[in-house]
Amino acid sequence: MSNFTSRLSDSFTDSVADLGRSFGNFLPNLIISLLLLIIGLLVANVAAEITRRLLHMFGFNRLTQSNGIKKLVDMIGGKGTVFDNIIPSIIYWIILLIFIVAIANTLQLGAVTTAINTIIAYIPNIIAAVIIFILSVAAANFVGETVRIASTNLGAQKFSKYLDFVAQALIIILGSIIALNQIGFNVSIIATNLTAIIIGIVATLTISTGFGSIGIMQNVITGLVLSQYYKKGQTVNVSGIAGKISSITLLGVILEGGEQKFLPYSAFTQSGQKPMTNII
Image 1 (tube, rainbow, N blue to C red):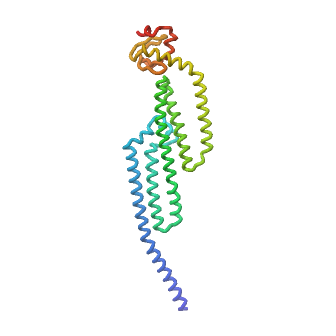
Image 2: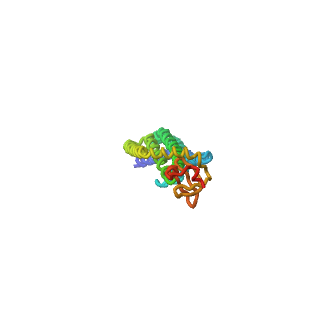
Image 3: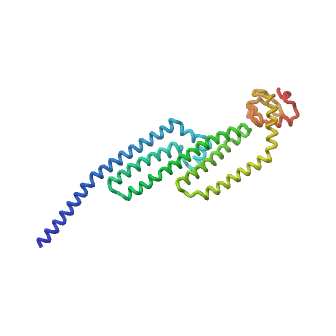
């Protein structure tokens, strides 16, 4: 009986000793891991904030400040801009994942290390997708502004904000599809349907432009002739419409008054009056 008790006591003592040694070996690694986690969180937050401030300093946030992109962001329920949130967040998580890998290695968690290394290896695809999206936003901003100016010069300023929004939305959607494909999402169905929609829009615009181009070209040619006679600041009276010319566009003139009026060049010729006789 005493031998059994002695063996049981020795076994218990050995187990406690092994547990103590294991805990003693694990405790330094645990402390180091906690320190790495704290340092990683601090470094990640600081790096994200520095990135955000640098982007603002160099004016990248202004790329998403046009009216069309703001409306698109509001429509999808977004807040801020891509430069305020997405890029700093990516920097934050990249740095934090690097520290997590170091923690997993310290704690000898092989499976966790393998999984995180797989994620880190995928990060270049994510960065490429973000760059594609940023370039699409920049291109959308440029094209939208160009469309707005062109539509205003053509006398369609009432529709300029809508054309601006549509142009920017289409470019951003296309850029988003390419970015998602870079990450690995299967967007072939979306791309096919969107391509069909864009082809339909372009075809419609082409047909409508073809039918209306004769009148537009006549108006443009008339404008080239009349621009020699009418200047900004002159007062005109054509077909019962009177006012001072505040702006000269490709298709007509804009008159000042209680509210701005657009007077196409065709009105000058249809009135049957000679150019200089219209000047009051």
